[in-house]
Amino acid sequence: MAQSKEQARALVLRVREAYDVRALRPASQAVKDALAPLRRTFSLGPGAYPWFLTNPTAVLCARRVAAAAIVLSQIDPQQWRLVYDPVRTVIHTAYLFAQLAGDSATSDRLEPALHPPAPYAATQHIERSSLADIIEHDIPIVADQPPQPFRDGEWLTDGFCHPDRVAAGIGQAHPMPDALALVAMGDLHMLATMWVFGGTSVWPRERIESAAADIVDQWHRLPGWAPGW
Image (cartoon, rainbow, N blue to C red; front, side, top):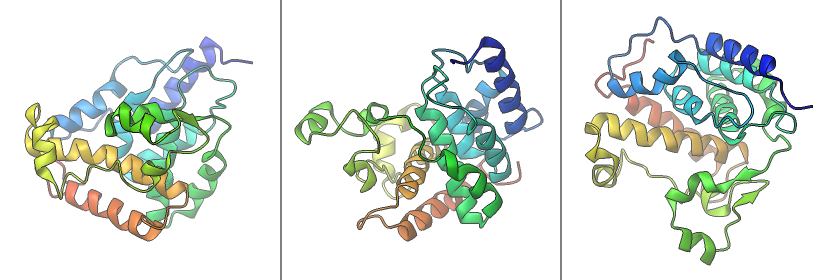
C-alpha cells in the first residue's frame, strides 16, 4: 500500500526533528542555503523529489545526519511513491560517517537499508559525463548499482585539488570558498556510495575513507565552515 498523506506529513515532522536545524546560525551563506529547505515547508508525499535533503546531510555534524538517516531508512521504496535516490544518498552518507567514526550502533541500524529493492538511477549524475559518453560506453540509466565509471571515481570533481575546474563552473556564481565546498558535497555523496558498494581496485575503501576525511578537514578550514554547529 502506498504512503498516505498522513504518513507523509508525520515523516516530514520526524525528519525535521532529526535534522534539528532551528537553532543553527552558520556563518557561510552556502551553508545557510543548504539548510534553508529544512526550515521551510516540504513534502515527502507522492511524487516528491527530496534532493533538498542531500546537502544538509553533507554539511551537518554526524549526530544529526545519523538521526535523519535512521528516520529515512524506514521508507520502503516499494510502497512510497517518491524519488528514492536522494533518500539512499542520505543513508549512504550517514553510513560512511558512522564507519569513519567507529559508530557501530548507527552502522547496524542503517545497514539493512543500504541496498533496498529500488533501482539506482544513473540519470542523477549525467552532468558528470556527457550523454554521448553514456551512450558510447553503454552506461545503464537505471540499474541495481552505480555504473562502473562512477564506482571507479571517474565522476569525482576533486575541486580542492583542481580549483580551476570549480572556478570555470559553479565558481562563477558563488565565492570560491563556498563554490569549492558545494562541489565537495557532491563528491562526498559519491564517495559514500562508492564505499557502500565495496570500492574498486582503483578506489578501494581505504582510499575512499581517506578522501572523505580529507574533504571534511578542508571544509573546516574554509571561512564560515568551521565545525561547532
